[in-house]
Length: 399
Image (cartoon, rainbow, N blue to C red; front, side, top):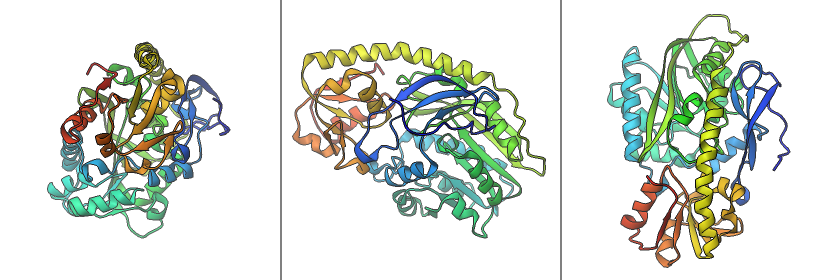
């Protein structure tokens, strides 16, 4: 399906010369879908990988405000044990590099503020968070007594407030307009201040088991490598202090490739002459090849469900499900309804079927197809242990 969105110049170097590697497609969840697909491309000038033909930043801002999945409403705002361990680790990485207890710290895209609470536990009380979701801000206050504001970067930069350290964990891959965001970041950061970022490592997507094409999600629209991350930072006058390619445990038997890096705001000339990134295209092509092989197995599993003609429920309406509804025979299955933990989807529809809350499963007897790899184990436990439901579970992954 071709979208009406215009071509997107390279978010780093601005070139319009690109090569298409893959076309990602999603089914629409009535008005809750930001868009229904994009081209995965690499810039022919600098080598950056990104999603092309996508909506404006305003559409994404509205989506994160209205459809946030980062407030963990099904756990009353609390993170998973995996996220708790990950955020504790990040606090241990960041805290030793902060100059002193008076350091002013801003966490952009902080969700419910757990990382900031961890840093406060390390002796840094001057903490502020930004997140577009009012529910996240409320959870941060309730759970951790952390000040989280729903202001944008632009709105925050327009105030007189400035920070010595800014943290962006899993944020840059979501931003359509990177240069505008970095203009605001430079304004917010004091001279010599530190910027700590973590982003998925596109060169290593294929190194870890995941659902096919899951890293080309509805939300991740920039695909960074060490070279391209440096290119972005150098363009805006940031000097690298430290960079590491590593990984983060996301859920039961699911690991994310990751880049962790500190940069310092420096009085150096910004450059728009990027180094050529030859690693991203290799990494993405390897990932696409591996995903295609896994997708063939997944399609065969779905074909068996469709051919059985059984009435089923499908748990999940995120990237995994919407991609399969658009690209496999799942849309032909005898689906009675979808189940979704994110309360923002209640009352909406997907493919003409209602989206119901988990508690509705107590009144249903249909088999449940669990449409997730990342959270398959957690969803199965929620069905059996929390909801006490005995519905047959159709699991797509051997994890």
